[in-house]
Length: 100
Image (cartoon, rainbow, N blue to C red):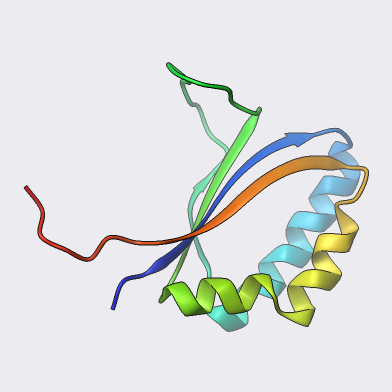
């Protein structure tokens, strides 16, 4: 079964309040098996537009990633980021096929 991922691009506008959001988000992700693969860090954007922060979260399945996003736990957490960050978030199914 293919894993699921959240791919997130963020511009933080209020660092102090964003830190509280991050703590709450950790708790909302835990029941769904969310695991950070990328959480900030250096990056290069050779094509297209970027935001100042990038995050990739892996879930054990695409369905777990979708369920987490739509969960009451995450929606409470999501409400915390209003006015503190601009987000682009996609939920995507991982590739589980043949590799080159």
